[in-house]
Length: 67
Image (cartoon, rainbow, N blue to C red; front, side):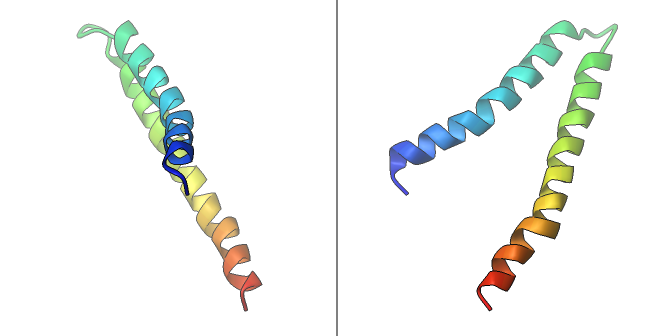
């Protein structure tokens, strides 16, 4: 993989995550930390579910196609 392709792919994946987390952190405060906490839980759950689905369906198809 070319380095430029890697950097563009990495930015495409990372930038939305950082923007969402930064926005949630900016609207939360010490008196009301709920937006940041809920966003952290939501992002973690989303990525965990994505990894679970990829592990369950994506890798198996790829592994079985080589047999």
